Length: 614
Image (cartoon, rainbow, N blue to C red; front, side):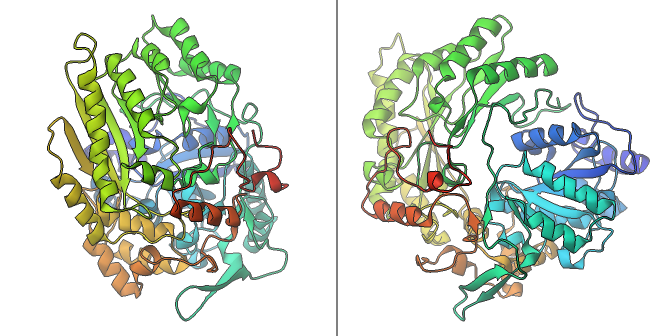
C-alpha cells in the first residue's frame, strides 16, 4: 500500500505534504489484535483539518488510551481524488497508510453543512457503503460529531451514531462500548442500543419519522422501548480538569491557523439571535488564568511555534485576558512570540491589550458589527451601538492601525433596504474617525474592508423559524449595496448566495435530504464549500432527481407548532425562550447579556445542566 501511494499518488499531486504523515508529535503505535483502531476523518483538506481544535483534542486524548490507536484521515483534494479513483487507491490514514475500511470505527467531524458531500465521497473512496443499512458486520462503525451534529437528520442514513455536544468524556464511554463490540461481546444492534443510553449519543436507526401531506413532520419517535425520546447534549463541567493537549502535531506544510490554539473558555454571554454557537454551547465556562498560562507554556515548549491564538467565541469577554497577554509579553517578547485575539467585539475592545499584542507582530483588526443600522443590531441582539463603533474606531486609528475589516450580514429577519445601505454609513463613520485622527498619530495607509455574508437561519436559535431570502433577493441586495459605494478606501466582498442557499437547506433539513446527497455524489460533487469547485447546476440536478424542493426547507416560514427536524435534541435552552426571543426581535427589543442579567433561557432549570451559570 505504501509503495502504491508513493509511486502513483505523491508524485502526481500539487501538495504531497498533505498525504505523507510522520509529522512531529504525531503518534505511532505497535498494533495489537485487541486494540481499537479509530480513524478521525476530517472532511476537508489537510490544511483546514489540522487547524481544527477538536481534532487536536480528540486525537491526543484517544491516543493516550493504551488500547486505542487514533489515526488521521483527510479529504483528498481534487487532484489526489482523481488519481486515487484512476489508480484504485483506497482512502488511507496518515499514520500507517491503512485503508479506512480496515478500521473499527471512523469518526467524522461535521463543521459545515457543505462538507457533507466530502463525507460521502470519503466513504466511497474507502469502499464503504454509503447507507448504514447496507453495511456488513465487518465494516467500520461510522460516527460523527461537531456543530452540524446538532441538526443531524440530513446525514441520518449515512451515520451510525452521532455525538451531540462536547466530546471529551462521551467519546471514552463510546469507545469502551466499541471495544466490547470488537471483541464480539455485543452485536451491532446491542451496541446501538447501549450507545443510545449514553447522554449525548443519537442513533438514528433507532428512530422513525412520519410526515403530514404538506411535507412537515407528523411524528418523530423511538422505534423501541427505553430509547430516549429526547437526546440531551453533553457538556463539560470543569474546564480546568478537562483534557487539553499541549503537544499538538507540527505540520510539514503551512496550515490555515499555523500556530498554537489555546482555548480559554466555552460558551458566550451575548445571546446574538442569529448565532447557533452562542445558544448550543451555553453556559459560559472559563478556564482559570493559571491553567491557560500553564497550557500555553507547555505547548510552546513542545512545538517551537512563535504565535499563540486565544480561542473562544468572544475573547474580550474572558476576564483574565489582560493578565494572560501581560504574561506572554513579559515572558516572550524577546523571543518574538506573539498573541492573537480572534472574535473581537466593538463594545468590549481593549486598545491597551491590542497595543501590547502589537509590540511583537502588527496585524489588521477585525470586528463584526453584523448589521448596519441601530434597529437591526437590536433585532439580532448584537448589543453594540453607534457610540461603541465610533469610540473603538477612534482608539484604533489613534493607536496607529490603518487596516480594519468589518463583518456584516444581509437578509436578516425584519430587514429593509435602508438597513442594508446603512452598512455603508457605518463604514463612512469609521473612515471619518481615521481622518479626524491627528496626522502624526494615524497610519499613512487606510483601508476599510467590508465582508457581507448572506444570512442563514440556524437550528436551536430564535431565528430557526425564519425563511431565508431567495437567491434572487440576495443578488438584488448585493447589487444595491455595491451600487451605492463611492469611496475607494472602502472595499466590499460578498458571499455566494447559491452556496448560502444550500447551507440553509441542509441546516434546516430532515432525513429525506439523504436522497439528494446520494445524487450529488453520483454527480461528482466534492468540496462544495470551495468556490473554485462548487457547481450549483449539479445540485439543481440532484434535487430534481431526488424529487425534493429545496425551497420547502430554506424559504418557508415555520410555525411555532410545527415539529422541527432537530426538536428531539435538547440543548438545555427552552423552546419557549427561543420563541420569546424571536418575538422580541420583531419589536427590535434587546435582551441583556448573561453577566448583566439572567434571561431565564432554561439552562439553570434542567438538572443535567444545573449549577453551570455565572
